[in-house]
Length: 279
Image (cartoon, rainbow, N blue to C red; front, side):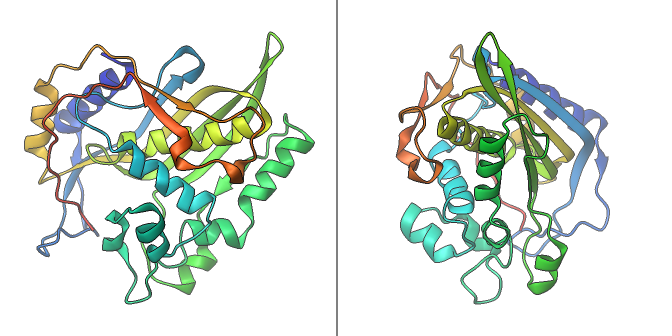
């Protein structure tokens, strides 16, 4: 059982036993019904990547390839274009959040990254002074929200810091989410941002250090309670998965490709569970 499995089960149990019900819920299921949920606030986890702790559960298969491609769409392509996501990466799940008939998710995520030239600024700051304390990615842009409709960013803030330990430089990252679907998106989002952390570390030839993960509202939707109980009953596998980035040290951030990532020693419990998303 991995550290992620232990945290996953503990969070599920806490939400089911101690969570409170959402009120005036915004999301809907595809049948039009209101997507209510039980939730807890202030969930925090820490993973020491340098010691082999990786935030992915073995209790159900996690679609790592499509999740990593989403990170490239947001931070390398810096795009909100669903056509690009569909055609270049063959990832379709964002299509449910298309704004009108624009072919986009509105002025969100990659559009905000591009608008503020965020990645180039982060890389420039880290190159000029790795120990600066201002390496913040914020996708919470009120001006952009007023420009168009669209889902407000869930994983909206990432911060990076470096540490020198015994002559080696480690890059740490902190991901903050305002809202997270515990059963569907929790490990997808965590793993995605570890991939982003690895890309930046590889750009500078640094080691990957710790990953800190804070979720303000962690919830389970009311059509997922059966799956939650099933996950609590499952026995995790004995594997210790880890993600590797197979490019040379110092490879430019924008030259890294999704296929350069490889998840090793990952064995998940099957069958996969079905989840109807709240939109």
